[in-house]
Length: 317
Image (cartoon, rainbow, N blue to C red):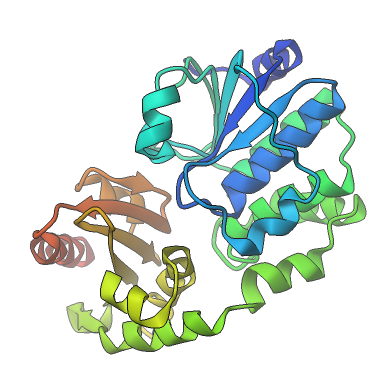
């Protein structure tokens, strides 16, 4: 059920023993939202815990410096930046997928799995949506909360380079810097620091590059063999996905990532006039207009790619 901001505040004020769920393959927005909400709730005297089904990448460790892992039976469950309960991962979905009391999100493809959903699809990040909630609640934006929300907004807007960067997002981030977010340090951690393994992987991936539609579609492939050879991790592929659309004349970048359990995940990054979310929806996926994803069954990744390229070619015509 869709709800408004006033109802969100009512629910958070009345909640206790709150479990905060974030999505698998975590990014800065889901973790930023989770940590910021944790700090707001604990400042109100409530018990809260942030939970993710995957190992948190080291580059986000600064977010969790003052976050305690408390053990309790949750009485209220909140999901942040999670459009579909399947995105919790199999284990957490089995435990909590049908028990989410509140979802705070910004994905237009949200499947309405929670009992109550607060959604603003016009926001470039769920952290921006959550910031408004905190302001309306009268919550103090501490340096830790500011850092978490700044991380969410900056990463989902590509360090303010993507088309979802709005004037409001920039003004909010200015306020977060005033509140104590160390923007320079966060930007270095998120956008300017990569391990050597990442560049080893990148060289392998660039060797896999294929081009379609007269240079308008660029395709990368990341295999488990590449990851094993380079020692890189799957979360390091996010930056590679962004590179796929940076070639001159490219309107769509597709990164095919082999999954550990078989099959491939396709990550799309687009420029106008292509809508990544609409393209992925044809294959059971979704996301945002400029960044979205879908899955290809094991053994059908090339067929799926051919179908996707054909659909893009049709859209371009």
